[in-house]
Length: 403
Image 1 (spheres, rainbow, N blue to C red):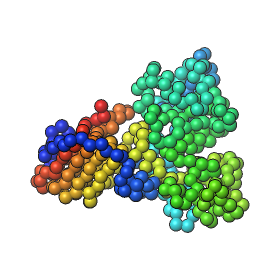
Image 2: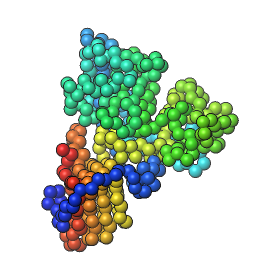
Image 3: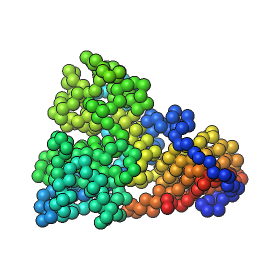
Image 4: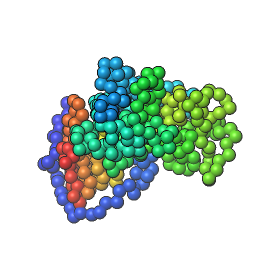
């Protein structure tokens, strides 16, 4: 049994040096490894990351319109939530099996509903799909605790072009809270599964996933090009334009995804009625978003397989770790960005290892979802093997949770 010493406020071998300005995301390590979607492709050893969501149903002042807080509607909504979770938990078989592309059956993402809330407010009921910031602002003023989770708003409004059924706040990095606004479909029980697919699709946009039919990257040289989605064998008749190397897929909700004369697929972002598949690199992009961007704030999770640093690394980027980090003997680990350690995780220093927080910070997430505290276990050293060294320089800090 190892003998460890937890460290938060009192450090062995603690030094403080003069501040320097750190430039983030400039290192070769970031560019060549931690920014790459393929780095994060999950396997059976990857942490399971759970997205916490709230479903917010906006009714008119008199309580009419939209979903209702009744046993019948709650039962339907719980079934939709189960389907939504299964979309990420049980990845369907790809309609187009591609040579050399493995079928990864589990994205290692889970979705749980923390709360279902019903509001009577005609003004908010009429919000369009692009007005998620206004809906979140209402929560900030009246129910700020609900902003801890990722909020999906269901309104009776419309979209700017009158065609979209919903909209996501955008990319996985937002200065403000993320959101989805979607339109109510409570009158159409037959469409419940399609609505679960739609929610999975919109969540995909918050993961930085785009449409393979009009917005994904088509240049093979782009670092986020999906070469496991766009391949020559599926590009019959393709004539790339605009300096691109590939063509977008065709889409139509009722498109036959198995027909040889079109490029429709069952990709979750592809807009067809069978949408359910995610490619390995799409999953990698998902986990990159969770670990390195603001969308990760809505996740909990812990993986038993440790991240072991066997050579010195400088992290000039923000990162959210869902597993323990081990710094081997003689290895220096420099943190220049914000390293958020998820609940239950620990950083272990071996003899001769150095942990230097250089202008950055190491902190617990502080997330307070149901049954969680957001607290990590700190930095530990093995006494019997000698202490490592902890340095805080240029205003760097190590804290229990975020202030």
